[in-house]
Length: 255
Image (cartoon, rainbow, N blue to C red; front, top):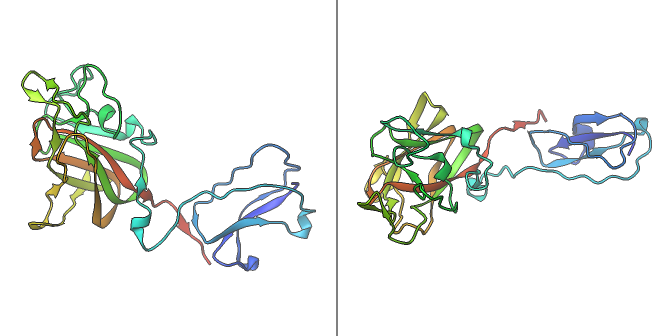
């Protein structure tokens, strides 16, 4: 392929197309040309005007996700479990200074994801030393996301292994609060309808330490920062979790 235009549109009429990028750099043989688009569109493809010469052979792929009114079709895992959310994007709060040598002093981002193996000498999940407002686990996303739900579980350990000599790893968070916003300095509390009416106290529906549960939010919200505050728990306050949603970083076409 010698030269070509990449376009996106909301019509099959190419005269209405938005040209994203044009290649006029000579023959492409085996290397890959990557074009960043970040647009909401229903049509994408290649244009080969006569002025750009003859059209030869190429293969192309379009990457993205659907933009549909039924948001619950797109609540994919945002990336704690598979590592797309980096450790540097996770924050923890505690009344005592965080120390990497004592996993029981503060919530540990290293243990927050679902289905992670337990590491020797550390709790099997993110640990919360208290249910105070200054003890939390926070996910800081790179762009604004629509958060449609959450998945969580307890310690991930089914045995009654002793911890700290007095408590048990057979543990989970029963209720919690969710705060969200676009900055750690400006967060608001999420509320939803439950058995006791409209409340900011969220029931996790967890009944054991290892069975994951999923919560679909009745009113999805947009945020770059999501903070979880534990309230009631069985035994130790241990939690693994995943955010469900999709990024809101694409612009609309002028057409």
